[in-house]
Length: 108
Image 1: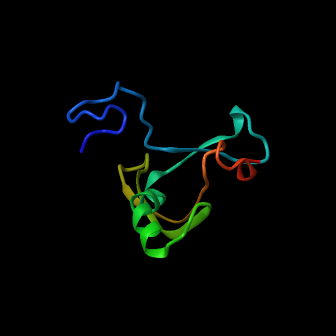
Image 2 (image 1 turned 90 degrees about the vertical axis):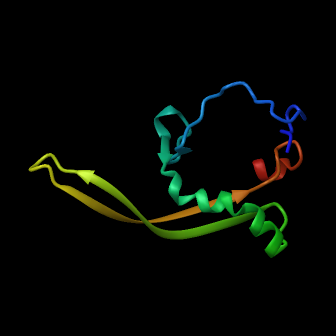
């Protein structure tokens, strides 16, 4: 399948920055001090199943998908070289809207 950017099979895009963490803002302020990063394992299922959700539920943009589940993180404690696994209950909500040029109402 040729990439949409070039239309030529086997062609690649220029290298670009890639971040595995999701950037978001926390709190009422929207400045640099409010930046936070979410762990990607909570939302990856939403994005990988996006096409499946669209075709099976027949929804149209704008719509939202939410999920809740457990996540685990391995930690090393500074005392006695003990490894422990921490368990977290995490919830993710992703709301999909059209680009601002197509639907400015949802961007306000």
